[in-house]
Image (tube, rainbow, N blue to C red; front, top):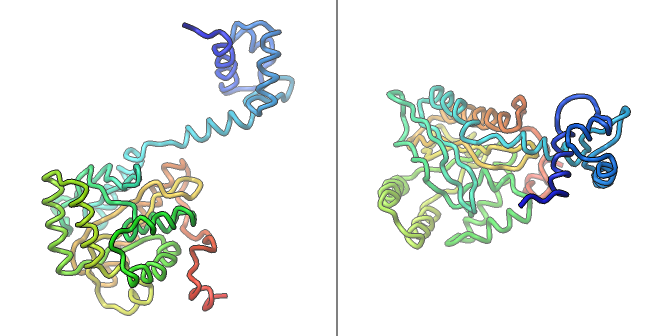
Length: 312
């Protein structure tokens, strides 16, 4: 059953949402088929709520209606936005690339691009592969979280030792500043990666998946500090990831490559540049604007006290 008052309001919204000059009341009446007396009541309320405004002898969309239109226009599908930058990433690095999207507390692979004959990586993570957004995982995402969400990320960790928590206190502000994270690779972790791949294809339950996550923590040297990166000649790298950001700076996902091998410092730097460039390109597509450098100032809670003391 059609509800006439609702239909009239929607017809006014549709009329005001069209491009062009402000509409006189008579033109709105013609477009909507409503009487002037009815339109007076509808538009007066829309004006009071910010959904319509009078200007230049007519009516146009108000700030509230324009804000909704802008938000909807910016909601570009992440898979569509990431496909071409991912292909460029895989071609530039010779490493398969994936894009994660945050969904219900998990980061899920929603698209992947192999690097063909040039690939130097382990087999690409399949679409549907998930990583829990809880400490110490998804650090590139956690580094962009507001303080309250960051605390929840830490609180959701299982099997996190005091040493691991201390390590996160050191590396998380550095990840936020540089805009990327590294997953280190050890021989034990390499075997665990192979086991995790086989378990995932066999449909494991949540309990087994959680225990595998705990083993990752136990076998990990969490990320890499700037000083460690400067001091080392090479590094065993499981993956490199950078966040994909909305226009307001919040992370909605990430781009990653998984070399699964030892790399020279120079090779790591090239891969990092390619990954962050890809993430910036995807972010720009989501925001429908040109890529912007990752140099914005950090919130106070992301600046480690030791760093603040050295850099007043």
